[in-house]
Image (cartoon, rainbow, N blue to C red; front, side):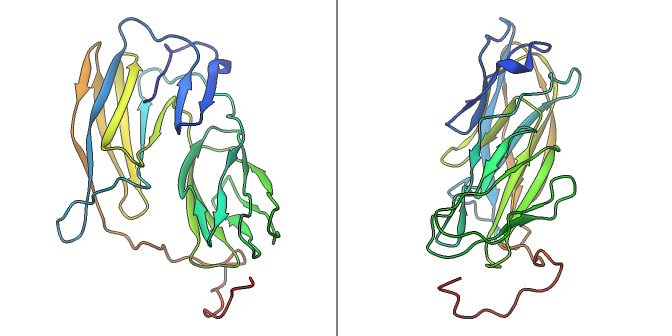
Length: 236
């Protein structure tokens, strides 16, 4: 569940809840409504996935954008079993992101996303390099050692954001009345948007995404070159 306060209140009221949603420390107006409904991901063969894992929903005000949010407390994206966990997450501009290495091998996290470029360099088990994201948008994360590792960090300015892992759909509560853009995104479907008008009651809908992209997006290493052919990299 995501909660928000009325437009114009101080951005310092923003806090980060460990449940994976944004929440505000002040009460929403009495006229606030909610947006809720199921979300489905359709496979190429027409079947629907049983899970919304790695799907993210953003509800962005169009008429009166909210005050710029304050940075969240540090966000940890762990490397475990040559995977990023969580694979999809979000943060506000200025948030510090750490990459704890819980494997017994080397990692090197990097991004070439314009406005949020960084390179941790190779780091050892137990280390946790830190970076700070600054510009809104989707930040694609990779490991320069392991081609199969990818993750996605959304840098958001809306107080309504939710990763849908373990959920059946979206539920944004205490939303001030107005017009919003609902954005749904998944690594294998890309982004789809809808315009949603919110009143003082419940705004209901049903939304779906279509799988159209590969599970692992083709990409180069941090030098813009192809990765070396797969080999026995148990120690790397």
